Amino acid sequence: MQSSTGNGALPEKKRLTAPQLRRVLLLQKRYVRGWWGGRPAALAHHDLSGVDLSNQDLSGADLTGANLQGCKLDGARLAKANLFVADLRLAGLAGADLSEADLRGARLWGAQLERARLTGADLREGAIANLHGGNPSNAAGYETQRADLQSVQAKGADFSGAKLAGAALSMAQLVDTVLRQADLSQADLRRTNLTGAILESADLSDAKLNDAVLRGAVLSDAKLRGAELRGVDITGAILDPGALQETVGRDGLHGLALRPITRERLATMLRLHAQWIDSDGSEGERAQLNDTDLSGHDLHSVNLALAELSHVALRGANLAGALLAACDLSLADLREADLSGADLRGAKLAHAHLGRAVLAGADLGPLEEVGAEGVDLATDLEGAKFFGADLRQASLRHAKVDAADFGGALLDEVDFAEVDLSRARMSRNRTG
Image (cartoon, rainbow, N blue to C red; front, side, top):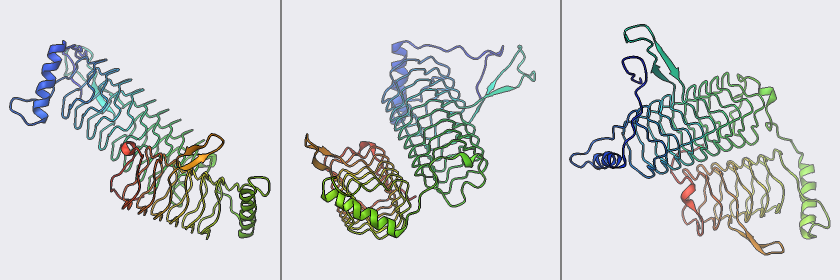
């Protein structure tokens, strides 16, 4: 609970001189390293707006009510820090560690939180003393201030287990964020971009998600009772059967339905596509299978190079040895599919679901010398989910893996040459 002065006014923000701040940070450094004489930074109600604190270790620091507007905190450690009702508007927190931090009532409007860690952070509302008159014993009460994360840029951030009940998150960019077991009940997520977000076992009860984007999101075991879903784009999202029955506005969802296709029609399309490939496009017809349900089909060794397969369901399909070079499989459901030995060079698998898929020996390297200019086309795995997949001896050379999740995947002898893994998730966590 935020303190106030005797007349009910909030404490005046104090601005430290540069030497004073250096002294505080030195004592904080000694504290986190366990050295004699160290003590946690006591910066409650201080004005630190615009200060560069990048990569500083402020774990356990007291920043209650501090003004951190526009503060540079990229890569900073703020684990278990007290940021109760702190002002972090437009602050730079890319890659910062805010795990288990107290952010109740904090204002983070427009903050940069790309790849930040907020596991177990408390982002519920905070109660602020609102004393009118000089006697604190008067029944003046308190006013509550909910955490404000509107318009935050949090691509790839980890909010696992975070307490976000009632938080304001409208128009936030939460692309490829991890929100496993997060409490988002009654949160305002209107017009929020949750493309590729992992919302496994999250509580979205009574949350407002109207006009939000949930393309390719994982909602397995999520609680959605009373959630408002008017105008939501749910293309390629993973949902449990019956998960939407108690939601509001589900009739206005976009991208939920998949088109069935007969085996005869599929065989015809594959034949025409093979002609199109063999004739360099002068005969036959390119396969357009977007939004189609092909789950369980036997497509081993099939030639679907350059085919359009976005938002296709291929769960449990046999694609062993298939030619899928340069095809578009974005938002595809390939869970439990057999892609062993498949040719996926230059394919687009952005936000595709490959949980427990078999990709042993598959080639996800670049498709070389494409087009008149002879450029190499890298395989796009941005935001792809490989939970528990078998990638042993697969080639991912030069692949784009920004926000790809390899949690629990078998990665023995995988070729990651020329791959930037700094933005991928390589943890051995469960599942999906």
